[in-house]
Length: 91
Image 1 (cartoon, rainbow, N blue to C red):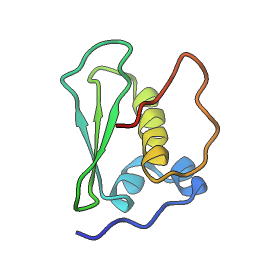
Image 2: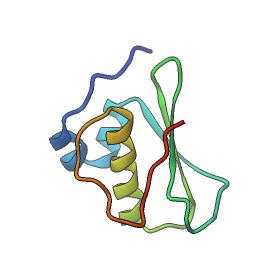
Image 3: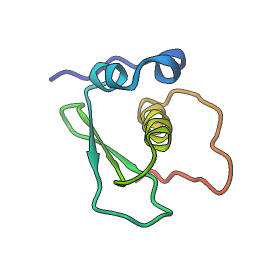
Image 4: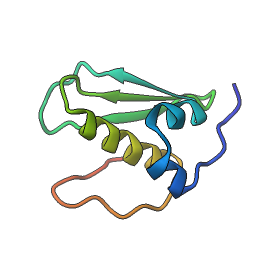
Protein backbone atom coordinates (compact mmCIF):
# COMPACT_ATOMS: atom_id res chain seq x y z
CA UNK A 1 0.00 0.00 0.00
CA UNK A 2 1.31 3.49 -0.74
CA UNK A 3 1.65 6.26 1.79
CA UNK A 4 -1.52 8.20 2.41
CA UNK A 5 -1.41 11.85 1.34
CA UNK A 6 -1.04 14.30 4.20
CA UNK A 7 -4.52 15.35 5.33
CA UNK A 8 -5.29 19.00 5.96
CA UNK A 9 -6.07 20.26 9.45
CA UNK A 10 -9.67 20.81 8.32
CA UNK A 11 -9.96 17.19 7.17
CA UNK A 12 -8.50 15.87 10.43
CA UNK A 13 -10.87 17.99 12.50
CA UNK A 14 -14.05 17.70 10.42
CA UNK A 15 -14.17 14.41 8.53
CA UNK A 16 -16.25 11.64 10.07
CA UNK A 17 -13.76 9.46 11.94
CA UNK A 18 -14.40 6.30 9.86
CA UNK A 19 -13.67 8.30 6.69
CA UNK A 20 -10.55 9.86 8.20
CA UNK A 21 -9.24 6.44 9.22
CA UNK A 22 -9.82 5.08 5.70
CA UNK A 23 -8.25 8.11 4.02
CA UNK A 24 -5.13 7.86 6.18
CA UNK A 25 -4.78 4.04 5.93
CA UNK A 26 -5.33 3.78 9.69
CA UNK A 27 -6.62 0.91 11.78
CA UNK A 28 -7.99 1.70 15.25
CA UNK A 29 -7.42 -1.15 17.71
CA UNK A 30 -7.89 -1.68 21.43
CA UNK A 31 -4.68 -1.52 23.43
CA UNK A 32 -3.90 -3.90 26.24
CA UNK A 33 -2.71 -0.88 28.27
CA UNK A 34 -5.46 0.16 30.66
CA UNK A 35 -3.56 2.76 32.74
CA UNK A 36 -5.72 5.89 33.08
CA UNK A 37 -2.77 8.10 32.09
CA UNK A 38 -2.38 6.29 28.74
CA UNK A 39 -4.50 7.91 26.05
CA UNK A 40 -3.24 6.07 23.00
CA UNK A 41 -0.35 5.42 20.66
CA UNK A 42 0.25 5.69 16.94
CA UNK A 43 2.59 3.43 15.01
CA UNK A 44 3.37 3.94 11.34
CA UNK A 45 4.53 0.83 9.55
CA UNK A 46 7.10 0.83 6.76
CA UNK A 47 4.20 0.38 4.33
CA UNK A 48 2.78 3.72 5.52
CA UNK A 49 -0.20 2.09 7.21
CA UNK A 50 -0.95 3.43 10.68
CA UNK A 51 -2.11 1.59 13.77
CA UNK A 52 -3.80 3.62 16.51
CA UNK A 53 -3.87 1.68 19.76
CA UNK A 54 -6.40 3.15 22.16
CA UNK A 55 -7.34 2.01 25.67
CA UNK A 56 -10.63 0.10 25.82
CA UNK A 57 -13.56 1.44 27.79
CA UNK A 58 -13.01 5.12 27.07
CA UNK A 59 -15.81 7.38 25.90
CA UNK A 60 -16.49 7.76 22.20
CA UNK A 61 -15.60 11.46 22.46
CA UNK A 62 -12.22 10.72 24.07
CA UNK A 63 -11.35 8.07 21.47
CA UNK A 64 -12.42 10.37 18.63
CA UNK A 65 -10.45 13.33 20.00
CA UNK A 66 -7.29 11.36 20.69
CA UNK A 67 -7.42 9.55 17.33
CA UNK A 68 -7.57 12.90 15.52
CA UNK A 69 -4.79 14.38 17.66
CA UNK A 70 -2.51 11.38 17.14
CA UNK A 71 -3.10 11.39 13.38
CA UNK A 72 -2.24 15.09 13.27
CA UNK A 73 1.04 14.26 15.04
CA UNK A 74 1.84 11.38 12.66
CA UNK A 75 1.28 13.60 9.60
CA UNK A 76 2.85 16.66 11.28
CA UNK A 77 -0.28 18.71 10.74
CA UNK A 78 -0.32 21.85 12.87
CA UNK A 79 -3.12 21.85 15.41
CA UNK A 80 -3.36 23.74 18.68
CA UNK A 81 -1.22 22.11 21.38
CA UNK A 82 -3.00 19.91 23.86
CA UNK A 83 -3.48 21.45 27.30
CA UNK A 84 -1.52 20.28 30.32
CA UNK A 85 -1.30 17.62 31.69
CA UNK A 86 -1.53 15.94 28.26
CA UNK A 87 1.76 15.26 26.54
CA UNK A 88 2.99 13.25 23.60
CA UNK A 89 6.28 11.43 23.20
CA UNK A 90 7.83 10.53 19.86
CA UNK A 91 10.13 7.53 19.68
